[in-house]
Length: 112
Image (cartoon, rainbow, N blue to C red):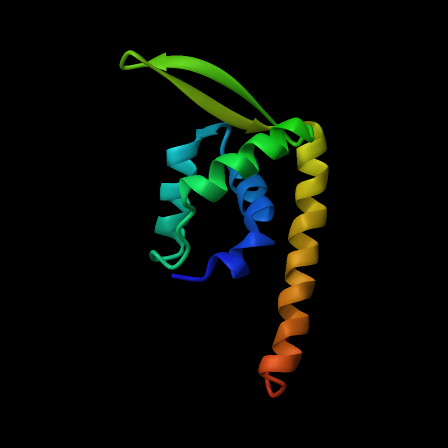
């Protein structure tokens, strides 16, 4: 599992990327999908996931629809048009950052 410090700057990119590939997802579903995709190395805890979802909603990157499921209200999040645009920026920035970090950490590694 990676430290919360490493994840802090990437959570928005992770959420936007997932929601751009799925019509809608609820919080627990997002956290489980990330866990599965990363073989358990990235665990989005409630204390970081839900504040990120709330901030991204307030910023207009996401929206949600509430539905009753099994007697409980569940928020299904989906990406907005602005979120789609920002996803591209976030993901490209993250790719560039990883490439830059590789220059420091593994200077012998040359991306093709």
